[in-house]
Amino acid sequence: MDTNLLSNSIKSSAYFTFTFEGESAIDASLLGLTLSNISYIANKVVENDPLQPQFQLKVNAFEKGSFAIIFQTLLACMGQLSTLTTIQDAASVFDIFKGMFDIKMALKGNKPKKITDDAIKGYVMIDTPDGTHIQAPTGSRIVIDRPDIDQKISQIAQAARLNNPQNGFRLSSGPNSFSYNSEAVQDIALPIC
Image 1 (cartoon, helix red, strand yellow):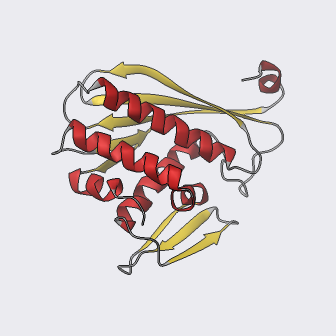
Image 2 (cartoon, rainbow, N blue to C red):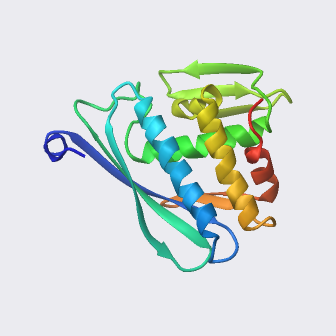
């Protein structure tokens, strides 16, 4: 990241955790694949933002227990971040990731029946073929629009399933924690057809 830009820009930093539920060890190749996919997706989400902020995703020290990966998102942008952009602050990256997992879980490998964007409120409403509706941050729509992002999210779910088929994974940021059990992981792993 250009330090000149950082000194003259709006900065935002946030932490989120991706936890493989179960054991405190993981196959190195599954860990590498998961880290690579989360990094790829986060960068594509930020590139998709109209303001194109500078972005870094860092991995912080691992904690003991279930295998938790602590990410720090760092964001710098010239000008003012607005509610009309995809990324309002560094914490938005967590919300977008959660939204992508929720969308894939709700769709269960199917294409959405209808997608409605609300740019003013910053969300997308997705109608699923089974008649349910899901609301997610606008940036989460990238999982539907981009097959490469869909594939990466599927691979993250597959890694969680391979790591421990009886458990899932958890996403958390501050006091907010969202668990995806083994059944949800199965749905998330399905590519959107």
